[in-house]
Image 1: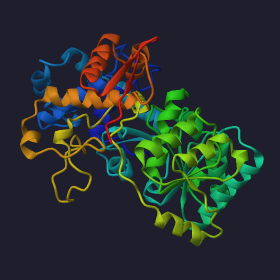
Image 2: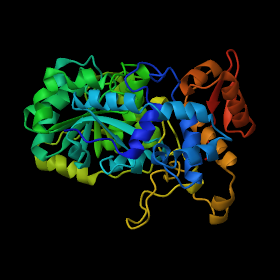
Image 3: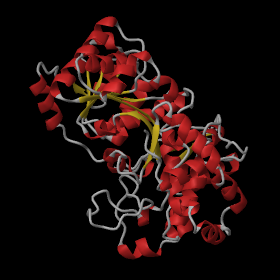
Length: 443
């Protein structure tokens, strides 16, 4: 029997998930909360020393009255009243062996909290063995169109990982991802697939069925199980794969385009969760040499399980940067939408009182003096959060229309935010056509 979602997870589902409906509307046709809207609500809840679960228990009416000055209480009430639809959705998913975990749940991967911090998905939809999230991982990624000889190498790496007791983490897509995972599973090992397509469809594929039954596979997604493939979902799941890994291997990649290239360059230049290795084989495409120029290491081709274990033990992790990547904005909800100054570091002592809305600072943000942490107004904190969010989208020049679509907000809001960043000398406005791009800090 699948576990019932915790009270916090149920509340976040009610507020942000279309449940069994397609698109962004609830079964009542009420628009679910966008990422920005939920971030504001979560910050307000934290200010009241409450958590999402308080919106579905006996304190709901009193709490909503307190929030009425800033939020459309009728809308929140209609979303929170979808208890029957939620029970139907949970039963529907459970019949497909899919469960939901939230950031406040013990099963939520610690590495997501430590590495992704504010941008960690508030909800994960999972099918399989959650204990695999705590094992050493090797990420193996590559293009869908990869020469057969390199696919066999990926398969061999998967088999070697199985012998070493290392979990293969990948995207479960055709090509390198699937081949590496199957290589490990066929050799009696384990794998984690972070999927960008429908989790319902993926978990039903015969290729994964036996490994799921044996407890040697975990499939997970930060999007609702019925969500169909979208390019931005494929891009967004890249950081989840790297966030799980002790080291990564890129088997093949185009240069300057495609999901493999985008994920690897984001990891090398911004996130730096783990070392990235590349095959030294020109058949893998021009992207491999280009990634090496950006700092990727040559794959040492360990010949034994002991050598692979030693490789993972020797990896040195690099602190994450301050970038919040744009794909994360599309994940529809932020369980810990709180201001950076109220955040707690992931190394908080285990005996400290836990609040699921308390979160770590934005990656790379310098610590602030205690007085400033206590006195910064919520509006200023929210503005700072929005600034970091928008800057995270501007790795490359984007138009107002593109930003508005990415962030799921109005063009007027996006224009105002971008103008503020330009005035702060944190972004640059380009012309012909008009676009905005982040300015790199000096030094």
